[in-house]
Structures are given as structure tokens and as C-alpha cells.
Image 1 (spheres, rainbow, N blue to C red):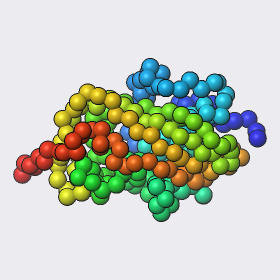
Image 2: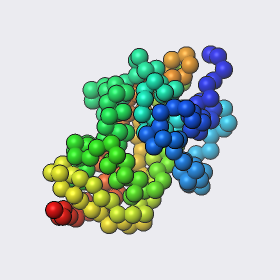
Image 3: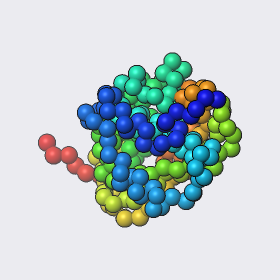
Image 4: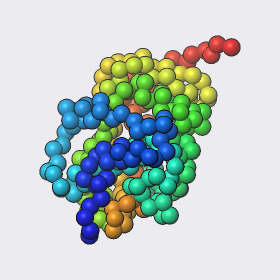
Length: 226
């Protein structure tokens, strides 16, 4: 394989793409998330290791999927082949995630949240407000390119109330408990010779986060003002 691309060696590589089409007009600020990551991560992967390379690629992919509004600017994927699926579901093209957002692409309908009733902007606002930082790391890598299988951890602190729209289109609230929210999952990624992602398949519990948001499974239904 040729020299590894920058998005495999630097977790912030795509943040330097100042000429890309960014949703907010400029690259987002990940400094707080990176600080929390360094302070609370479980793993310390060796520089240049397969684990660190996979971690860097996914971190850059997440930035692009969340904040780059044009697929032509995504450097971490092969736009001609890329697809994404959750828990064995129907593979979706990049255009789907561009339209609905990363949260809506992976979460399911429940009494806490509804991808149908929260658009791209609302979904990001809901979870960013609840957890100002949501760090991500690779725990284990089971196989190397071209088919990379790995286990991951995603975590943050519930610093503010959770507020969102559920499957009945009701506005719901869960009071902040100030504790850790942590989810784990497994992903299989097909990559090309340039380490661009061609196919992502992820397995995790879509309700796992909400089971930690509300310890007893209950929500407060809020009446909307008219």
C-alpha cells in the first residue's frame, strides 16, 4: 500500500479542509471533544498501529458525515461505492445521511426519540445540548484491510436535560443526571487501497443510550405552546 492518507494518520485531518462546503460555513471546533477524549479514553494505541489508523479514519469520517454538506468533499469514502447500514438493515447511500443526519441514520423510533420527527438540525441540537462532548474510540480491531472489523466505544456526560420529539411526535424531556452515558458497538468496514471506506456495517443497541439517559425508562411529556 502507498503512503497512508492524512485522514489515517491525523484524527483532525479533514478539519483543515477550509475550502470544503461546511454546514456552518467553516470547520467545526472539536477541541473540547478531543480534550475529553484524551482525559477519559480507555485505550492507548501505539502510534502508527492498526488500531490508531482505524480510529483516525473513523474520527475523520464522523466529521465529514456530520458537517460537510457536499459528498464531493468527503475524502474518507469512495463516493461511487459507499454505503452505510445498521444492525443488518438496508444499506443506505451517503445521500441518505447527508439528508437526515448521522443521529437519524442510526437511531430507531421510540418513546424517547423519532428520526421521522427530528430533522438534521434538530437532531444535532438535541444531542449536542444534552452532551456537549461525545467522544469516540476504538477498543479492539479484529481484522485489517480490506475488511476491517472493530469494536468501539462512544461516551459523554449528560450535563443538560434531554429534550426531543418521540415516535408520537410529543416533545419529551428527561432531567439531566450529570452521569456518564456510554455505548459500545461493532463495525465492519470495507476499504479500498487508499483506505477510503466503501461499505460500513454497524451493530449496536439503538436504545442503549436512552436506557442510560432515563434510568427507569420514563420521560416527561411537555405541552407545546401555541
